[in-house]
Length: 408
Image (cartoon, rainbow, N blue to C red; front, side):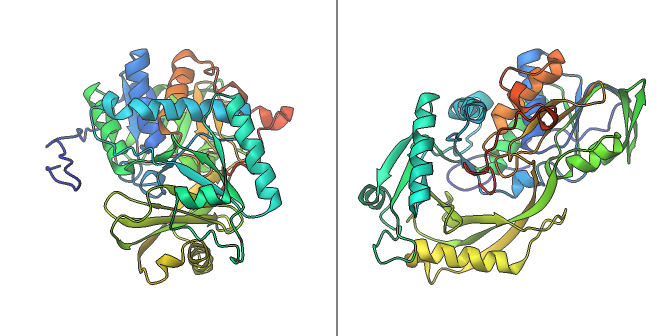
């Protein structure tokens, strides 16, 4: 890849090799998105494990890593969620230096608007819970919201008046492509093989232990196999002989034409249901809810976009004449409690990292850190313990629907 890019960012001439798969690896990671790449990087950096292959059926980071709205925050309600997302946010704060690459990480603040008394009560509850967990959080009254984000419609006559908002000042956005390229470059420098255009078609097992993966480019022996395939994880698990409590849905987002800087924070609203930020080069980035049907298609239905546009115009009348440039869809994997699944599976040597819903991008470094530890030590990282697959039989759920694992 040659030099180029906007914002004064120069890219190296070379980022990673494109190797042929070897016959055997200590660890095979299935999925070269953000979580797969971060896991490979931390396996090498934190645990000295470098005989690793990352297999991607398409192109590197061409799935949800390229199909999200890049929002980063850690203000989740429950202790378990706040702990892992805050760990991730702390890693984000030093990640550009760690990876020696400008990730355009911008801590511009994330607002969650409240439009009714239920929103106000939930928001204040979450602020208090965040503070108890050492996560920065503030409650803003309506006039303070207007001062923090002047372009939001905080009029008393609005159909859904803004009654207040939670604010996490350390939250923000990053450039998703740069994150993927930086992780891939570092993993490659450790000697990890990043192999594109290779699909896993099955698993070989001896006495309930995985020994190899079958692929479209031949058999690869593996000491351990780690799934990191987001919305397609349940398909892979079925090939290994066990079901997962996941449903895959399309989630759409869109960007506008390029604008001068006008929105210098992230604004999210559950009641009106849209979330909006402005990317570094000027486009507005907007997301909303998932399509209700199950699908592996990277596209969604028009009525969702229509509702999303209506919600955006309610919050930001100033955008009424802005034109949509393009839309896209990702495939989100949603668990029954809207929290991730990290850890071992019923097959020995086979690990899972899935169920992040729409929280995957913000969790990228934290997820990779704890997943790498879990794989390296064959036991869950302390932050991953609550997110074990077994919780769906024990009943120890971590219900994050209210704090918006879906669809934010």
